Image 1 (cartoon, rainbow, N blue to C red):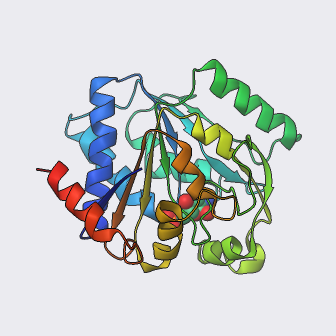
Image 2: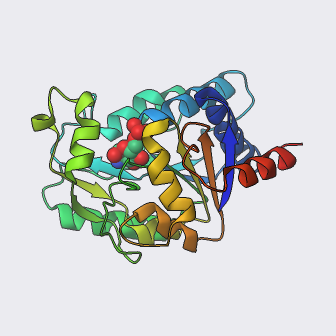
Length: 256
Ligand code: GLP
């Protein structure tokens, strides 16, 4: 795992967006796995800026959802499909159908998760998967206890996640109890992974992911098994890393 520490949330977004832009510049037909969450918003805005200024063209890329709530209408502001469209895709001329969705309203959810896995496999997998991290170490909606071999499936949300995400809804009671999520095994097949985290609330999960054992108790720690993971975090999210100085020095050296 390469760990890059930046001073601020905006510097994290610049670093992460720069990597996505570089990929799309070199390979416009890249396949990108898209995450949602507040942490991703600054990145998507920078990608839109790059599109508008002609620095990068996102119209030939193909996109795959990471996760989605079950039972939320797509027209709702809390639907991840809606968020990805409004925060990013509709601003960069991504054609209709460029996003492979996980449909949380499909009549047969199990069938929907199989359909998604087949579509992802037929497309040859993703080149770059964007990820955030939950305060309990979840990635996508793979809650603690998710196995390293898990595939896209219906999952139950952990109480921590329901409370962390309650501010997007009227109350914690309105947060769906179930979601669809790419599995950890599915995520581990991405050719590269970019995980972004900011703020002190993520510090414990980041320390467990980077320095703890690879364990289902902290799903993000299972990314240690992947050969090409970059973690971009701010100083607050890095605050519980024991090896922080080492990784900071390494990051400074590599950024010149
Ligand atoms: C949700 C999503 C995750 C995301 C996490 C962190 O639970 N399912 O994919 O990583 O939130 O979101 P935020 O960036 O808002 O902290």
